[in-house]
Length: 242
Image 1 (cartoon, rainbow, N blue to C red):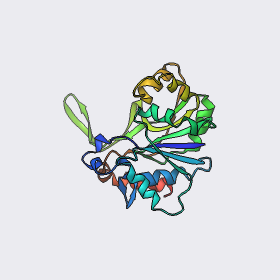
Image 2 (tube, rainbow, N blue to C red):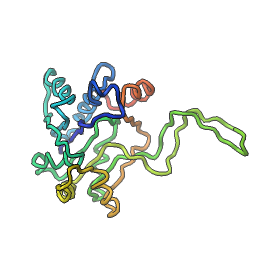
Image 3 (cartoon, helix red, strand yellow):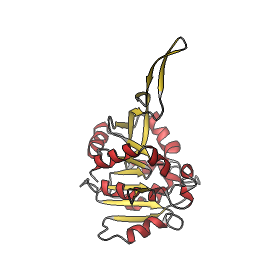
Image 4 (cartoon, rainbow, N blue to C red):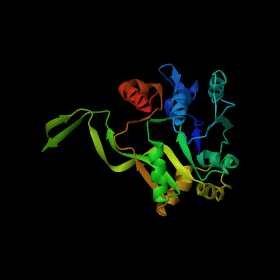
């Protein structure tokens, strides 16, 4: 089984930081974000190869330079992104996936000690075309109040809330049939995986949702997010065993 890390986004939410380095190279305790993801993926024996897609002609070149300077780097393949959207990038590496019945897709700004083995088993059990990591509980970053007749009766400081609808994480397991769906859209200049492919699959009830339950998850959009959530990030890295 192969894992694909999409690391070619423009990082608009992380500006001005991402004008100087890609989100993948956001530093955490002296190491770039992407190294934590790569090392975590390598803890699963069924992951045989990691394909990192980025704009290596631009800021993404920092990712390849980083790994070029590390010793004993194995099973990593670097692929220039296609500039044709998230779905287009998958079609771009179709040849590398031809022998795979399923593969992991991980957006680089996601940090989570998700149990990929359980997620894979769930994906197979549901016989779905795609499986999305989701969560139904979230720790809020602000305080909340219980109000009765315009009077505050209780404060809830940064509570963990049960969500009415599931929140989608940027971690997927996809079946090879997804490539056929993308091929059907190949005449588009850009193919967005969520809008152009998964939206239709959801209507056909071919997407399963793997709930991470009590696991922590962070959307690492910028160094500021890391600063605000230092304890959570440390907890995730510890859960990853890194």
